[in-house]
Image (cartoon, rainbow, N blue to C red; front, side, top):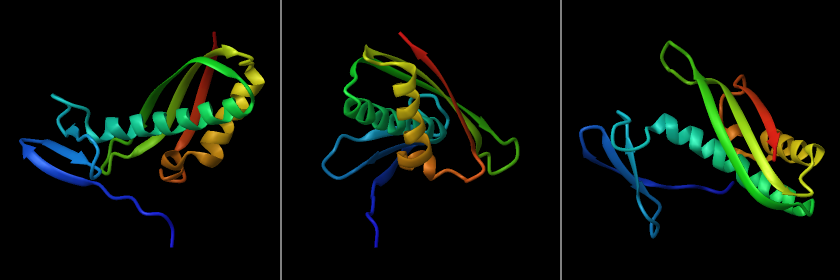
Length: 135
């Protein structure tokens, strides 16, 4: 049996919820996107942070000294219910000593195609694309 994950979510008021992993700070989620990120926005953030962590790890192994990494993520959703993502587009901006295009693209490709568990958890027909800017 594989690893398990567990969170606890509590309704606060209206469409506002608070979730946490035991012993860690809580995260507020607002299904109406008024006071906090919505569940769908959190999914984009989860995908961005998952691939960013992979890219940092892979580039460190490539002996790249990262100065900065930014990942902007845009999702396209279906009009009909369920309004799931049909496409995600990542915009990576990377700066660092030794951060060439070949190294960066290899790290991003490995993350998005093999390692990022959030992206791998999306529907198999979700289109994944990215742009890269080196600074």
